[in-house]
Image 1 (cartoon, rainbow, N blue to C red):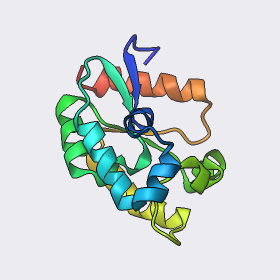
Image 2: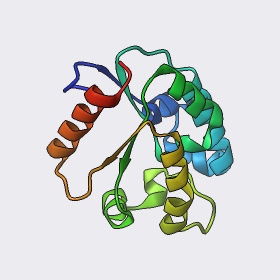
Image 3: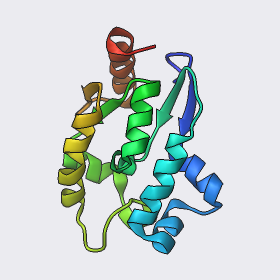
Image 4: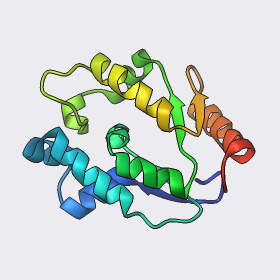
Length: 148
């Protein structure tokens, strides 16, 4: 957002603000399906222009949200291998990851990857790149291929 001069919205923060609870608390109280329903509703009601919207990884479960996001902008999937995601995430429960009881990170990865690829207008591989390199690559790809 800063590189493009755009606004920034983190949907996880919007969800927490609306529910007045941490993501992990919402998931614990409502289960993953209940959380995904809240997430779908929150994303579907965002009003934004020239804004980078960072969603949680489970946003792809919300067909309405993904349809809406496709209508208002360019969907970018930042692809990483599972090992790198595992290193970045840490404790899944504490982090507030929407997952079924007993589900592994590998299973989540296998389930979500085809959805990310299905909805993406642009796919960016950032394996081994620094944050700065990733940001520059994403910005360049968006300016070249995205809808502004």
